[in-house]
Amino acid sequence: MKIQHRVLSIALLAAYAGGAFAVGPQPAPSPRKETLTIGYVKVGHLSPMMDVAEPLKACNVEVKPVEFVRYADARTALLSGSVDVSGIGPADLAIALSQGSDRIVGLSGVASSPKYLVVKKGVKLEDWADLKGKRIGIAPGSAVWFQWAATLTEKNIPYTSFTAVNIQGGGTAFVQALERGDVDAVAVWEPFESQLVAKNTAFFARKIEYSQSKAVGAELGLLAATREALKNKPEALKCFMWAYKSAEEKMAKDPEGFAQAYAKYTGLPIEVTRESVKLIKLGGVLDLPQLQRQAKTFNTLGIIPKDVSGTVNTVWDPSLAEAVMKR
Image 1 (tube, rainbow, N blue to C red):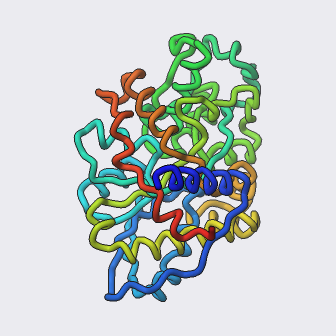
Image 2: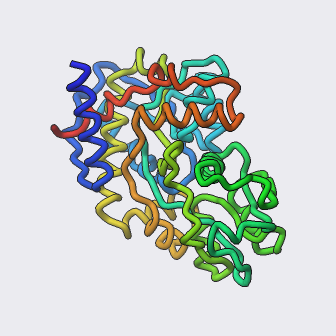
């Protein structure tokens, strides 16, 4: 049975990666009226969130939305039980486990994209060798930083070969820092990468690609729920997963529709989101082996205090995502 379960997971992952989405019929409604408190993290690859509330009504589920700017805030809300389900960062399961909590359970990845260093126009920074002596804006502890640090480690590039400039706050702070000339380049996330490039302020250094490390990979985030919600509201969460995957499927097949939804969800100009969706591929690519590699690497890098790669399987359950997909 475990072998069959793993084969199914791999098959679904391959379908996501190839864009061959196959969402099944709407699940049966919850037998009683339920309320799901859902965390809405305002990042473009979670735009399908804006289309879940209406179909959930047909499942006898009312949505109570809570907005977050950062994954870290959504993780904290899940840990406290103030939300039932939310998007969080790929590293957040390992972070929570290392802090002694198994309350958050990952359900599905959400999207992937290539990650290129974004370089200020006029700066010579086109290959890894050009990093030496440059000022690179980073968000320490962010999902993007995990990708960046892991790639440097695998390429044996010393972190001291450049000047790391820690930037606090959201992506707008990165845009401002680059435009002011405080940094030569930034390791940032969408849509702020595309915003800088669309404004002709910067360019993608396409030879400095950092999303393909063996340790961290290209996943941009994941859907996660509290263990309590999985136990007490299983029908509501199954309907949520179906609604999310249905919206995800629709947007993945319609780039302009995705860009419009992205603009509405985040409040960004459509000309920025149209550029951003060229990079983002909806549909999760995360699986348990990747989570295990991440957990081990985060401990090696000193990001989390202990290696939880041996127990991260206890907080990963893709069965809901599998249940709403066509076989």
